[in-house]
Image (tube, rainbow, N blue to C red):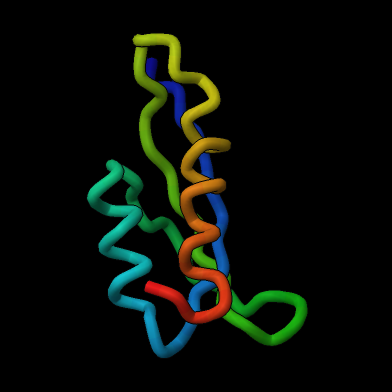
Length: 73
């Protein structure tokens, strides 16, 4: 049985492709994009949990996403 980990991240309209490509390179599959509570877009991703003990990979990936905050690529 596959176990999944999930990640949510804001999408900046002017940098959407770069953000999605970054997550895709890290093995994340885009599940859905919805409007967030403050009007922006939020992307939901999933990927299988690996058996090498990296159960907190989603947290590490979330930290990596901060490079996109403030419009930086």
